[in-house]
Length: 180
Image 1 (tube, rainbow, N blue to C red):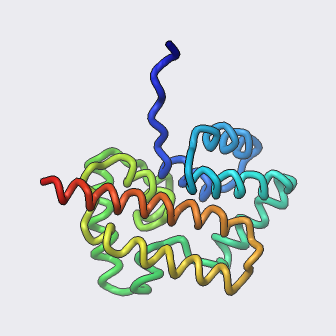
Image 2 (cartoon, rainbow, N blue to C red):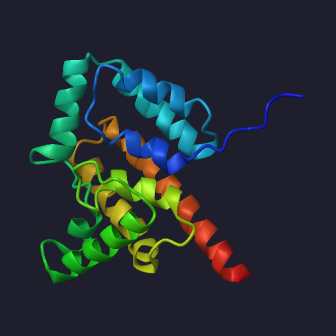
């Protein structure tokens, strides 16, 4: 008999794709996506293959152009849905409080950024109901925005993996809620 299978936390693997690339990022992503199955694994392997064709400086430029300076899509759920208004602030305060409860380090990001949100989904069995309702819509808007701006951008694969990871979390919550 072999060793017991490890639990792959798909949201946390996908979240790593949103971090600024470093000299070890590609190898780390390659290793972490090896155990992902289904559509999430497929999309993540496509993302890793696409960015693997780039020199580190090119990947850094792509990351910055796509996600940071005048981004091709905004990776902040609350901003995508509500802009800079009270509703976003309230959403972020609730999310931050619950992320702290489950030990999520924001790593310098706002709580509604996709990186900490995906890690949060992996860390809690009872995510905020508003997040589970609003997140799929926000991801859909992000995907449409990137497709219109730059349809061949490798981050489209990362967003597809994000959508699949979110769908898996929403389905899991629906099953858990139905069994209670």
